[in-house]
Structure formats: C-alpha cells, structure tokens
Image (tube, rainbow, N blue to C red; front, side, top):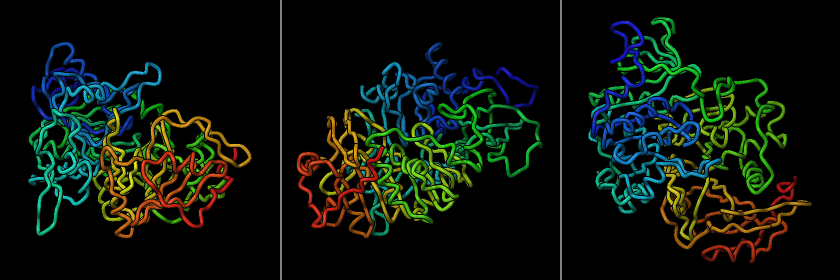
Length: 527
C-alpha cells in the first residue's frame, strides 16, 4: 500500500485506499447531494473498475443521494454495470445535466433494469445503521406502513432485479410494523475536514455530518474497513476533543484531497458554518413565476416560534420570499426555527442544490439524531413538495413516469408533524404563468397533471393523517386545498383564473368547493 507518511500512519493515496475493496462486498457511503460527498474516493473506485474490471458485483448503501451528477458526480462514479450489482438508497439524483442534457448514469441503470435498486426512507437508512452498529437483528418501525416501502406496496423495490426480503411487514404484540433486517457492511466511505495520522476526524469547514458517525460505527461492528477523505492532516492532539466527531479507532485509511468544493457551487462560505449578522441581505432572490407565488402563499402559513421542517424543491423557497418581501427585517429571522432532515437548526434553509444545509445556522445534529427528533414529534409543521395527489389523499413523490427520486425524508417527516403543507405547481412540465395587476394568467398549461385518479406510488397517506387530526393543506399557484376526512376541498382560487377551465377540469377526480370560496391575496401576484 502506498503511503504519504511514515510507518504506522493511516494516511495513504487514493489508489491504495480503494485497492482494499474486493468483489461482492457491501460498500456504504455517506453524502448529502454535494455536501460531505467523498467524491475523489468514489471516483477512484470507478476508475479502478474501468482500468481493471475489478472489483465486481458490489452492493452499495447510500443513506441519501450523494453528489449532483454534474461537477460532484458522487454515486454516478460507481453507477457502472458489473461494478454495481445492488444499491439501497434513501434518495436518487434525477435532474438532467443542464449543459449536456444527459440523465444521471444511475438513473439510466435503474430505467434499464441493470441494477437491483431499492429505496428506503432516509430515516430508516439512518436508524438501520444504528441497529447494524449494535448487532441487533434489524430496524423495527411503524413509519412507512402503507407506503412504497411496505412490501404490500412494493417493498421499496425500484427495479425487477431487486430482491425480496430487504423490508418485511411483521406482526409484533398485535401491531403491524416494517422490519429492515440487518446485513453486514464491509466498506465505509466518508468525508471530513481534517484528520490526524491516527484517523481522528473533525468537520470544521463542512456544514453537515449526516450519517458519517452511524455509518462508521456500523462498518466497524461488521468487521469492515472505513476510508475517510479529508482536506488536510493536522498534528495529533492539536484539536479539542469536542471538535473530533469520529475517533480514529473507527477509521482505517485516510486520503488527503485538497481544494475540494464544500458543496455544489460552494467552494467555501462561512455562512454555512455559523450565524452571520447580515444573513437576510446575503440571500438570493427568487425569479418571478409560479414558484414565487407559491412561496409567498406558503410564507403566510409559517408561524413564529414553531419548529418548521422544510423539504427539497420549492418547499424551501418560502423563507426566501419572506426575506425579499421584508418579512424578516428587524431581526425577525430569529423568530422562526427552521430545519431539514439533515440536522441544521436556525438561519435559513437553502433551496436548489444548496438544500440540506442551513445558511447562518445556530446548531447541528447528526443525521440519526435528527430523525429521533423528527419521529418524536419535535417539528410542529412541515412544508413538503408533491408530484401526485389522488382523491383518497394519497401523495406521491417517490416514483412517477421515468423519474425515480425515492422517498428521501418525506415519509418520516409527513407522518410525524401536526400540520402538513404540500407545495407545488398545479401542473408541471412546460407550465408558464404571468401576473399583472394582482391577477394570474396561465399562458401555457403544463403537460403533466398532478391531481390524478390514482397515484403511481404511495409516499404518504394524507387522508389517514387527516383522520387522526393532522391538518393538511395543499398550495399551488392557482388554488389552495384543504384535505379533510371526506377528501379534498378547494378553499382558495387565484384572481384571474377560470375556476372550471383552469382548476376543476384539470383534476383527475371530483373535488368539493368551499361554500365561502376565497380569492387568493392579490399581493401574492405582484412583480
């Protein structure tokens, strides 16, 4: 093995690190989009296979989508037939490359049924790692019953090659549960900021830690090998103990890769690490259009003092709209407690490829602990996206058409909050709207309808949530619905749209209209 330092050190080069991976092993890797992604190690593993044809038939476990399939390729590095036999992931990367138009390589493998692909809720992925780490038979949970993760509805299998048995529905003490059996992890790959030669890892310039500790513990409990990618080597004993989040006893090999970006389009930014006095001034503005209207309407639902968890996509736009419209002036940002499933608290949940990390955060939990907080009801309200909704209140974000994003943290969050806001455009793919004089005009309708007779996959049963007292509201650019025990009720419509032509006629099922149908505030549609 090639060394960068003297005898006894754990530091080695990339080729030496990936040389320890053998055929048919299980490889776990921690990353969240572009954040904390060990991109160089994954790239070296893909390159080794390209040169030598080895290792073959690996099983990969990614708790969350890792990389962006662009400048930070992440899981796309190892999405090669022959190298990847099976993958279990909490979410997948789906957008096409903005320049080349190429679909992510892993999406192609899934579409062509060239890999045994599974998707678990991210919370199940995080907590499953804990069970592997403590040598238990597996993870038992009520979360996800009746969704795509339930064997009665697919068991999280995304391809025909995917095998049965990774998720079971079991009866325990008279109740139904989902059970995720444990299996050993041979290799763990993670990223940190700094390491010493003993392998002690710190994260001082990275905004998340996510599943890194849980993953390292699970791999070592399996008798496996942990590889850490870091930006620098520091002297042993040079950091305070509370800065070292992963002790060297859990790390076998350290690879130094300097000048890696912190995240997608972020080389370095102190605003992702600590509170800044001028946070609101630094935030980007949303472009005009349907998403901005939705963000403004969602902002009206947010309440000071409530712990609010925001999801991926347009769900995280509301706080940017509030900032632009002056709702956070005078230090009012501190009135709102914002978080995501990835552990940041305070400041602003960012959107786009910067999602998952809070800007100007005040506190940070690791991924597994954050899902303890979520499952325990720590978040009062959630704002999440939707791809499809049907008459029974079933919601789909996990699989539709040729798109396979997986469920992410959606199942865990939606089932655990008191108040759920679903935000998204009324139709999609090609939708164009404009607004003048406080009125909305649909210039071109989207080709794909989102209110359908039957969803293609079940990510959440909002109707069941309503029956147990959860408040569920759906916000689009032209209409607002409440989900009641009797089904959807249209409660607001945008000024300027035709109720029947632009709303009711485009729904795949009949919907009740409130007797006192309100007109959406014209201020939502200002330039």
